[in-house]
Length: 141
Image (cartoon, rainbow, N blue to C red; front, side, top):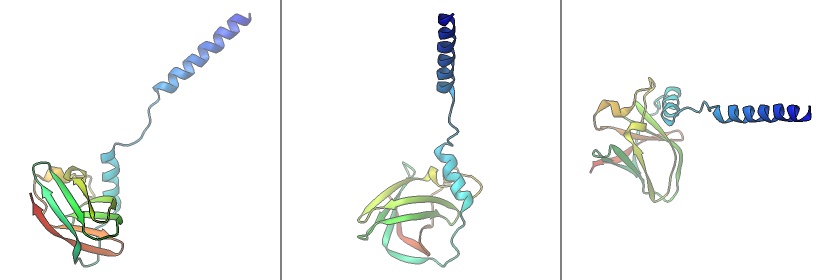
């Protein structure tokens, strides 16, 4: 009697463990997060000012942008905008450093990726705090 009860308990535990291994998480893909962020933000309404401390280079062959921070302080919690429509949220651009961003990671508010445009951005801006900066460049490499 005890062995039947023990066998049933072990079978139940094994089944629970198997089901636990089979469950999947509903974590969205990174592109879904990026598109959701773009859908929830608007292009800044302030007039853009020319930056003297932030520049940008474009590498068409790899479809990437490099945002360069010439200042000493890091730029935290900012947005990079392409052509006033496509946005990417950047956590940190280190002082005297840069970040490399993929064009495919920029989305508009409708969920379209900039990569689908098959074009080179003509206007690249950085929103930081209450300011909108037109970056130096772009320099196409």
